[in-house]
Structure formats: C-alpha cells, structure tokens
Amino acid sequence: MANPSPAPAPQALPKAAFFSFASCEGCQLQVLSIEDQLLTLLGAVEIVNFREAIDDRRDDYDIAFIEGSLVRPEDIEEIQQIRKRARILIAIGACACLGGVNAIRNKRTPAQLAREVYDGRQDGVFKTLSDASPVRSVVQVDYELRGCPIDRDELLETLRSLLAGTVPYVPPFAVCVQCTMRGTPCMLERGLPCVGSVARAGCEAICPAFGAPCEACRGVHDSPNFEALGEAFFRHGLPRYVAAEKLQLFNNYKEIREPWEKALPSPSIT
Amino acid sequence: MTERDVYRLPRERLGALVARLERDYRVLGPAPRGDTYAWEELRPGDPVSLDYPTTMLPLRALLAPQREVLFTFRRGDDGEVAFDPPADERPLALLGVHGCDLTGLRVLRAFHDSGTRDRLVTNRLDRAFIVGLACWVPCLGEAFCRDMGSLDNEIPADLYAWDIGDVLLVKVLTNRGRDVLTEVTPMEAATAEEVVTLRRRLRVRLEAFPQHLKFAPERLPIALEAAEGDLLWDANADRCLSCGRCNLVCPTCTCFDVTDASPLDGRTGVRVRTWTGCQVTGFSRVAGGHDFRPGRAQQLRYRIFRKGKYMPERYGMVGCTGCGRCPHHCPTRISIREIFRQVGGTA
Image (cartoon, rainbow over the protein chains, first blue to last red):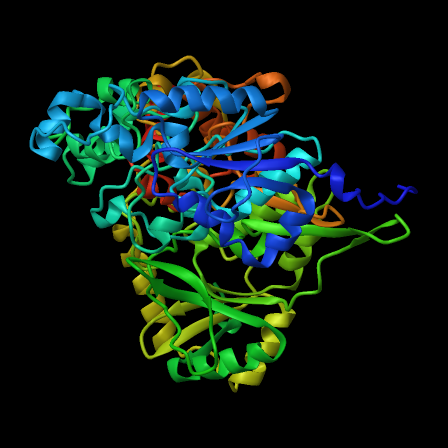
C-alpha cells in the first residue's frame, strides 16, 4: 500500500437524498442523531434532499434512501420517479422494508377502515391503496436497512461498505444469537411472548436486553420455523396464536404474512 | 483421594483467598443475573457463591470471548499500514468452577492447541488460576455430567474444593495452587472426621446423580455411526428454530466468524472474531450462495456428531460435558441427552 489515497475533491462526493412515505419519520431522525459522526458523513456524501434537515431540494442524486411504506396511489408514481433518478435505492426502516405497522390494516378494506377510523366520513380522507406495501413490492430495491427505527451504526457501516465497493452485510440469523451472546436471560423463560427465534438479527437484541420481548421489526431471518415457534410458545405456557399476534405487528404484508399464517393459529385480534 | 493433599479452608477465609488472588488476577465468580447466574468480577468482601446452578454462558465467554479484537490496523499519512496486537490483559482467577466447566476448558484447550496454536486463547488458559468446586446436586434437570465423566473431573484446576459446611476441604493440584493456599491458610490437613464426612457425602451424592445413559461415552462414536441414517434426526429437527442457542451456551463449541470493522474514513479498523455455530442460520453458506450443509436435520446431526464422534476422534476426548445447558436453553427442549439415549439403543 504505497500510494496514499488523495482526499477526494468536494464535487466528486456521491449525492444522497432522503425521501419519506407513510411513517413516523423516526428513521430520518435516527440519521440526524448520528451527531458525533454527522460531519464525517457529510465529508463522504453530499446530501441534496432531506426534508427533516435542509430546505434545499435537488433531484440529481446517486443514492436514494426511502423511509415509509406506500399507501396512496400517488406514492406509486413518486417512488417510480425516484427509482428512475437514483443509481442506488436503499429502503430504510420497517415501514419501507416490510410494510411495517402500516400493514396491520391490510386485512381490512378501505371502506371498512373509513368506517372504523373516521366513522364513515369520506370528506377530506385521502384515497388509499388496498394494501400498505413495502418499497420492493413496487420498484427494485438495492439494499435494505432493517429495524424500527434503523440503527445508526448500521447506516454508517452500509455507507462505508458501498463507498468501499463491497456488499453491505445483513445478518441471516436469529435475534436469539445476539441475545444469547449478550447473556440476556431468555424472555420466553420469563413467560414473555418473544418472537426473537424467527426474527432477523442486527439489532444486538437491544429490546430483550431492556426487558422487552422481540417483535421482529427487522422481519424474519433466512430459515424461520414458525411451527417450532408455536411449539416454543406452547411449551412456555403461551398460546400459539399469541405468536401470530406478535408477528402481525410488523410482518403483516401479504407475502411476508403468508408463511407464518399457514403455520400458526389466527390471532384473536386482527 | 489421599488425605495428605487435602487442606482445611474455613469458610470465613474465602475473603482472604479473593484478596490474595486480586493482587495478581482479575478475580471472577458466579453471581445472580435475572433468573440465572453469570460470571462477574469479585472484589474483596463480595460474597462467593458456592451453591450456584450452572451459568447460562459457559466459561469460554471469558477465555475465548463472544467478540474479540484480533488486531487493529491503521494507514498513516505515508500510506503505510501498521498493525497492532491487542493490549495485555490481567490474567483471570476463576472461583468455583464445576466439573462440567473444567471439562469444557480441557476441550477448549485441545481445540486451540491443535493446528495453528491460538495464542490469544491458550495464553489466557495458561495464565488463569482456577479453583474447582464439587457439585452435590445436579444444577439443571437436563444435566448428565455423571454419564459423561465430568462430574468428578478436577483438571485443569489449581485448587479443587468440596464444600462440607463450615469448612471447605481443598485439594492442591498445582504448585501455583499450593503457593496461593499457603498464603491464605496455615495448611492444616483435613481431620479424620472431615474425611469421613466427605466420603459419606460423595457416596450419598451418587443417588442425586442418576445414570441416564446405559453405555459409556467411549461407545458414542460407534453408536452415532450406526444411527447416521436414523429418522430421529428429522424428528428432532422438526422443532428446531435454527436460533443457535445450543451452540452459544455450549462449553465446547469453538466456531467463530472473522470480520473487519472500520469507521467511515476507512483509514483505521479492527479485525474481529465473533462466535457463531453450526445451528446458526447462514453458517454453512459459502461463496455464490451455496450451502454445503442445508436443512435442519443435517445440521442437528452434525452438531451431535461433532460432540460425540468427531471430537473424540480428533482430540481423544468426548465433546459433550453433560452440563445440560443446550436442552435447558433450547426453546423447544431438543435434548442431546435424549438423542444419545436413542442412538445408544440402536448400537
């Protein structure tokens, strides 16, 4: 390694943009809360569009970060426009990657929802698609940063990896792996309804470490065994359908729901 | 046991032992954590647990930790890359190690001694001061340490203690152990009465540790080989979650992954070794997405074969200590003891 890398000229920085669909915008706030590394981040990419942070809005970006799920007809058009402009499209957060909590409503029709939520009123209520959908159900997604909200270090690591020309690492295994390594006593053993054994890791099992059972906000891992999850619940004195209730919180978009719906009894609340 | 090697350590002298060890070592002992126990640092004056159930994580968490920096690297302004080894650590003193975990340390050493010797781990093992502790009752319902020959294992302890009430009877196993004990006690030999008490308790103890297997662990390789095509692998694997807990709580699992981590500037970084295991999803996936050991049944069979056949063949010692952690911490209670029982029946 004899050649020192010259500092890249400012105009050579890749341009990044952040876009928000149906969500709490908590993932964008996570990006802003990087604080100690924000300046390093700004030295590595030029941010040209970020509603939570800057007034300037330009459409000449290389990397588009997408937060939120797609719920309105105009969302489809907008995400297709973004896809056309961006070289790399990265979905961030449970809403964008899985449909997330917005997809809890997917088993109801828009008319049912209008009745339940707005007491049947139609005026001023915007048109909704029949399903709240993850970004990849509409356009090609290059990378996904999972979690509700996303993890700051994982965002930086993904950027570092992309700038270095390597493929960002996504853990293929269960939350239990990181939870056990941390030495956290098992939530199921404490009688708490935890779905960490089918959930994708990457979060360092932060929820169980603070006493809250896992809700699979990163989706499921690469070889989930939902029948065995029901068995694990049953053996710990929890009804099998409770496992389904936990999974529908973040993993209720049809293609994601289908495998666990087949293996577990229906939730008592939908 | 010869009475000559066994000395009296009155219970109230335990604090003096901790204080003595603290001069040269980072002293650790089992301490309550939630519903279970974990190895925590002991300060002089802290209570020492002598009747703890086994810890969730095995001792290798201290000797070959979950995440370990192998070296750091940095690129200077001249473009040259420099490598730094990890900083020196205080050696460990481990107070109250059960027979199963002592056996685990023997297997850990055999693995890290073989091939290219792993100095990070073997140095920690070499320098550790270990006080073994006899068990009077099985600490987990799933334990079968007696069957696996680890209940009475004293190696590699420096001192080995039997708690018989007001006094601990301590056997000296190394010179280092003798030196430390000499500084803490006047080296009074156990009285004839105490030796009788110990012998009686050891005899009665066998009733608390029933035998679960009808065969000696030496027969496991043959028994397993005969059961290779058995349906029991599928039957057990059906309820496997691939969560990897069995690997992570095992005192003799040694598999790890190696990755580099670096901040955004890319000029500095660390190479890190992290625990993984054959039941962890993605473990057997290699370049191009190929999986050389696909399917839960094959993966479960591999784990059991590794413990009962491959490790005995390679290291001359069985890879299961009978500690009972893997069935106890498995969410669906897949039991290595039951699988050993089942394969024993077919041999």
